Amino acid sequence: MITVRVPAKVNVQLGVGGLRADGFHDLANVFFAVALGDEVTATSGEGVTLTCSGPDAGAVPLDDSNLAARAARLLAAHHGIADPGVHLHIAKAIPVAGGMAGGSADCAAALVACDALWKLDTPFQTLLELAAELGSDVPFALLGGVALGRGRGEILEPLAVSGTFHWVFAVADGGLSTPAVFRECDRLREEAGTGSSDTDVRTPDADPALLAALAEGDAVALAAALANDLQPAALSLRPSLAATLRAGTEAGALGALVSGSGPTCAFLAKDAEAATAVAAALLASGTCRAAHATYGPVPGASVVS
Ligand code: C5P
Image 1 (cartoon, helix red, strand yellow):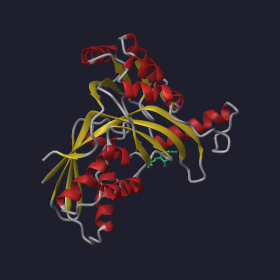
Image 2 (tube, rainbow, N blue to C red):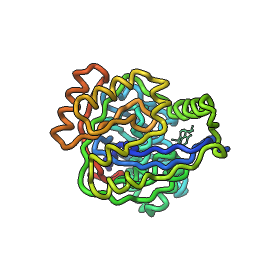
Image 3 (tube, rainbow, N blue to C red):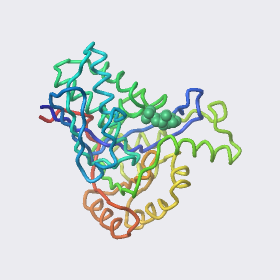
């Protein structure tokens, strides 16, 4: 039996370029791995089967559309294993369809867990390549820490970071579909008259002030530099998130933004004590379903037993 722990992510910068011919957008995506995470346990089984536990377990598909099952099958195929046998249990803490890459995290964890269970010793670089085939956010869940993702987010460059940052995540009722949020971003750009294709929109770059704040461990400077080009689209599809962002800011958060494609909202706090207070205030405000205080950066998918 192999258990793998895997982090959720927040994008401290999500710069979104124009729509490419392949349906993806070029990104300048600064991923940050947080301790709020899932655990995936792999045991020997017949075929590839899945179970899931946790408050949101009912919203997790347990068929072959689940990225964790697809990861097990892709790893087996890569090694010429015709008839893979594994049962994967997902202990789910990451919000489902929440903009924190929970499905991608389970996918990365399944790659690492099956690799260990089947004693394949796949090189890390190969795991990263398989991860990129499975989804844009999967390679980062393997890598963890803080990294700049270029291309559709899969071309990763680890970034320097000092110390620990304290975060609060406000979980909304229901999820948002990532493709729908990207489509809304394109629609808003068309409406504003700027155009939405990759010939209209400049390819984004990482913000030097944000990179310096991470390297220096400066939470106030990082809060000032937080930026998410998908936020207007997430707010357009879910206007109630404006009240959530306001409630966290009024409770003393240094900075606030929608996490990835949302609807989870992320708040940066001064320290662990402030994060606990912001989480309590968010819950009391009635503008979210749950609020979790956590920290990062933390490593990517790793075997714990
Ligand atoms: O790669 P992944 O399967 O996670 O992407 C889900 C969807 O999100 C894509 O089909 C696309 O609609 C959108 N997406 C995008 N640009 C990216 C990443 C994702 O438009 N860089």
